Image 1 (spheres, rainbow, N blue to C red):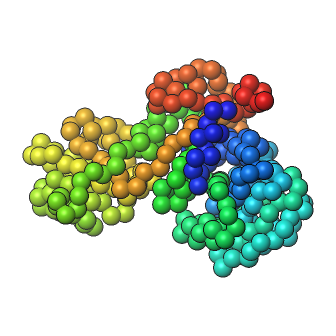
Image 2 (cartoon, helix red, strand yellow):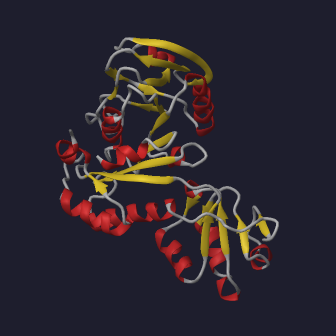
Image 3 (cartoon, one colour):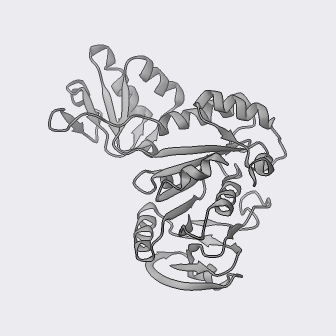
Length: 318
């Protein structure tokens, strides 16, 4: 599949689902199976628990994570002890989870593993830094429970996004909601210079703080309340909101688009590269969307190729 070559250009890539059962783990397994391991060192982990054979929320079957021989992986002490594949232990880190410390090991044979890696973004960054000792070329992070924070550019350089019928059972709504997330991922870099542009980072919504600044630096989350307050000031002058990255934005699509139409701008200090969007047209409740229609409509909306991993597996296999 074309996006596999693109993944090789980055040191860290997150696979993120917009909802449970949108095909995130299937996408991860697809990527793992097609990455070169004879000359390319790959490490895989999950933020939190992933790789279980049965979804703990919906009680539906889940694909397990399959390691290729030679790949490194990070998981908790508990699940490392329960592994069913032959592996070589490389490190027991000071990063802890509810299931014990995070263990780094190398698979000596192909097999399935339960991944329960670092449980927070900061812990994940520490574990990723520890891999510098092992000459890792690429780190894959499986984002659990729709935690978009794993896609933050502060953690990973690039991302693969999974969406599907579990996110919305209506194609029009699914395309709209997914394309909104893609719009946020693609927000432009902040191009101003702090020494030349007055930036206000504030915790309250005082109108003076908003009215007296053209560029407003947002510390923390951008919410509907803050966006509406800034939008109210747009007729009196241009406004640009500067957010750390797209994962800090929690606003409604309608308000966001109204703000942009009115002349407002939103930029980011750190930016992720969206490599691919994959879809799962099947929901756990049995709803099945038209895969071709979904891929075509979503691709047209976001301007990127969209892949149904399961349907197209044979098409792209060599």
